[in-house]
Length: 331
Ligand code: HEM
Ligand SMILES: *[C@@H]1O[C@H](CO)[C@@H](O)[C@H](O)[C@H]1NC(C)=O
Image 1 (cartoon, rainbow, N blue to C red):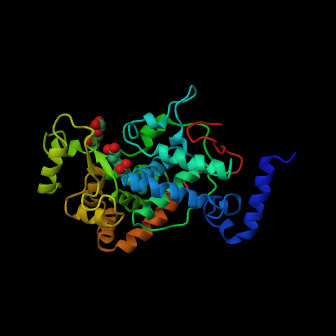
Image 2: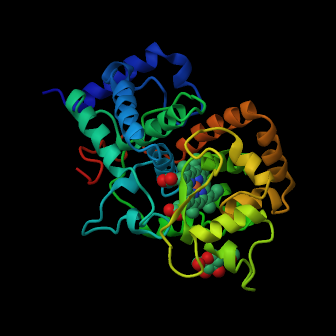
């Protein structure tokens, strides 16, 4: 009897032969053409589910972009973020940076269900997250990039690492640089990827410290522009209102563009982690904020490049991990 594994192996050899250039690239064993033969409809299915989900809820594009980021920073891009808790482990969903905050799980479920109908046991949840992030950016008006594919899904999640590895909104510039370095990402990746905050929303609890007690002195962050600051105070009062939301890019919250960087120059960045890219006294990040604010094309190019880099963090390949049947549980 032919095992599915053997068939897949022969198929991947055929694909490697058909696309020798991509098999010798620097993607750690991943390559964009993986599903061209095994699931040619994969891209269309992801795109069509997203089009509907985002037209119903424009914020969903942002939520799906963030989901991929939060997946990759915890034991690599292995869909660990999607696992519900079970008797063996706590879920990453319950960790501080994710709880009551991360969204989009149902959209990934819908994509997975459609893919399982058309090409069973073929497209991993980790690859779905990477494709959904890319397509969300494209549908919001941002750049396109080819997504290297072939990540397999983890059999475990790591609640503690989710708490440790994912940067907090009140991070200093040095915290941010360190956490990104730990993932093999540099200062340029940090600034370019922070540009993901050109779409989406944050809860009051994520920026309250800046409004009322930035340095433990009961004073606001002096870098906040006055009228912007007053507006934020009405959304986010001293006590309560923790779940009230405000756009990360107040000028164009559902459009992927470079206004996030322009707003930073005007003292209108929402999170402390946004602000410190400019005022954190690191020359490199400061200069990049300015250059992205001036030149959207450079931002788009760097963003796409850094997304590929982030998407390649520690993937499970070959015999490691599995292709989950449901993204919420191991097989
Ligand atoms: C640099 C360090 C980063 C920090 C400290 C950070 C922090 C945050 C916080 C606190 C929120 C709001 C969560 C809430 O209040 O519910 C948020 C939202 C968001 N983040 Fe980040 N983030 C960072 C990097 C990134 C990266 C690299 C991406 C993607 C490339 C990203 C994409 C997003 C998006 C799209 C949203 C909005 C999500 C939505 O509306 O559902 N962030 N981030
Ligand atoms: C960030 O916020 C956490 C939790 O609210 C707090 O414990 C920590 O001291 C804050 N860090 C900074 C640098 O303000």
